[in-house]
Image (tube, rainbow, N blue to C red):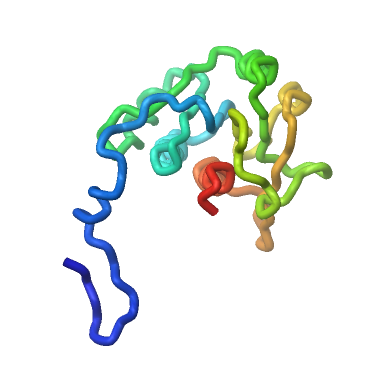
Length: 177
């Protein structure tokens, strides 16, 4: 059943049709695309970003802060397990990712940053690093980035929240935008 207003050329797919077209089970760790909000400020944004991970087939790497598991559980409205990697030492973890051959891309306002529109899809295992919503990626982690990407903004704000910024970058890295 599709919803159509009289004369509309747009057909909205019914939920049943969408379920038939998509994965029937949660994906395991594909180990290709990992979003890493390693210095989170707000728990609600982590849960929202977890939904995007499911949508694009990515995993999430998060710090072992006491409040993070509850934030992820509360935000995971899919009611299925998600691929989450737990990180004890963010700079050390990023260094190990690079040593293992991963491309480390940071979302940051930097002179050398490429615009989001120019970011190519991930062809190798890629870690997308998100910093603190107020202070960004800490200085000790900036040198561990292979590339910085900037999300252009025309308003007065200097940054987007972690969920919005991470979602935009994940969709671009996944080749879905």
